[in-house]
Length: 234
Image 1 (cartoon, rainbow, N blue to C red):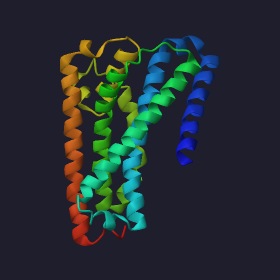
Image 2 (image 1 turned 60 degrees about the vertical axis):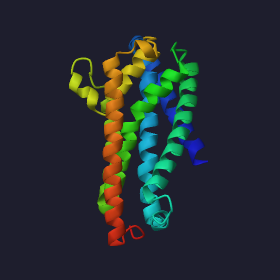
Image 3 (image 1 turned 180 degrees about the horizontal axis):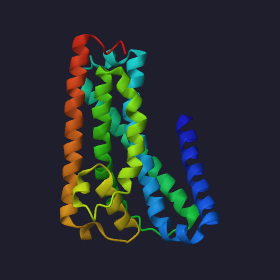
Image 4 (image 1 turned 180 degrees about the vertical axis):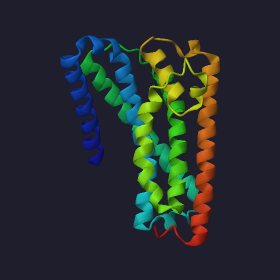
């Protein structure tokens, strides 16, 4: 029920932005409609992927069930990783449905090759999951850290708009390069095999780096929290 309400809220908010923009500045909206749809699609998935992970951890900590998960035969970290993968798949499915509705609502013409969207979109979201593990792990040790979760989510909007073509170093930040490549695929209709090989390499490298860093921090934090007996007392 909550998922349906959240989905409806996301769509209604987009519809308000679209119809309001068409009334106030139709020419400007027409020029930026494609990037707007793609950006909204990506940021909703990023926020959902990050929030699902961090909120699941803090909720289970508050309920006192993290201690039970830590006794799983496959290990606490793997339990969380599996749950995250399942949540991410659900988030991606929700994002695709939302994207379809936005296309129907706006009438914008976008190229949506499934394989390319899955590859580029997946690699773009992995660093966000890495951040979720990093801050979620930190919250296991420092309860007050949970208050910065919303600030991190707000930063996603800025990351999507970074000028990676003008400042190449920005390509190593989460979401920045991925959002640029998704716009090239969907708006400019560039095929997956025509995307710059260097950019795809950077996208894969950043996905691996952020995911690895997040998991290392999370495993360390979970181990320390277990030693202190804090997994069941958040």
